[in-house]
Amino acid sequence: MKKVGFASIFATLVIGVAAFAFSVTVNAATNSALGGAVNNAPVDVQSNAQLAKQVRHKLLMLPYYGVFDNLAYSIDGSKVTLHGQVVRPSTRTDAARSVAGIAGVSQVVNNIQVLPLSGFDDSIRVRTYRALARTGGLYRYFMGANPSLHIVVDRGNITLAGVVGSKMDKQLAYMTARQVSGAFSVTNDLKVEGEGEAR
Image (cartoon, rainbow, N blue to C red; front, side):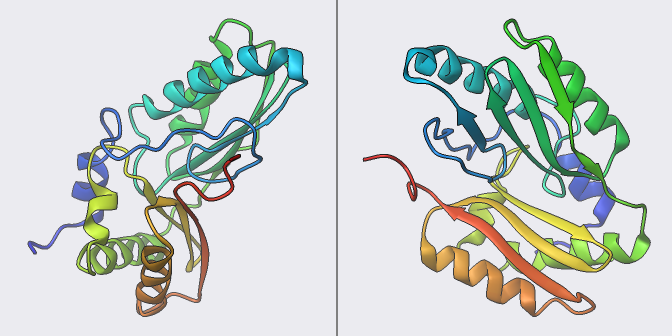
């Protein structure tokens, strides 16, 4: 695999809609990349489902949302709370502004954290990305501009977030990230597609 730097990875992965995006589970309180927790009474199920779909779409369409960011949200009536971590301050601002423009949203609480500037963290981001992309079939989770697997690095600590297709891939990603040199810890917040959905 050709070597890629942080800047080129970031620039390649920040425009467009995810080629490997998964649907939001409306009736479960999930916290995955662009997952949402919806607090709704039975009479509001349809309207909340539509609102969740619009919020997710708006966040996916942010111009600089990429593999090293992770966004999530929760909905309580007409109030939307944004969560997650981003590497650019503008992504935090754009996310709140975009969601606030959705019809039916009366309030946006922006709890998105802007990660500190750090060359050390940047190097870990790149090493983690390369290691995961070269391992087994994990490369497919990085396909598209907004991949389903996200790598969050904060002061040398790695968090894997998003959605993968199997428990095996979840464990493989975790084991691979643990081998990245320089990282202090690895937290595996990956969700497996279909788990936790109402049946």
